[in-house]
Length: 71
Image (cartoon, rainbow, N blue to C red; front, top):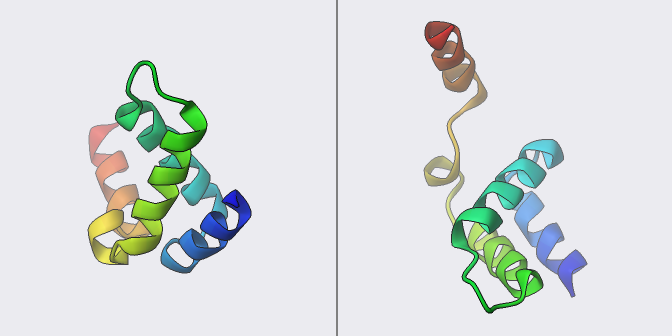
């Protein structure tokens, strides 16, 4: 079930808002034509749950500093 996948992924990314943003962006990137989007989303949640937090996303301080520099 997807709820179990989300629960496992929350252990990697504790911020649920960031988890939803990352999952939606990754689903768009990894989706292949002629496949179900549900399967792609499940695969993304598996990848997030299995990955290391440091390799997955920038820390919030680093991300905000980069955003300030870009502005």
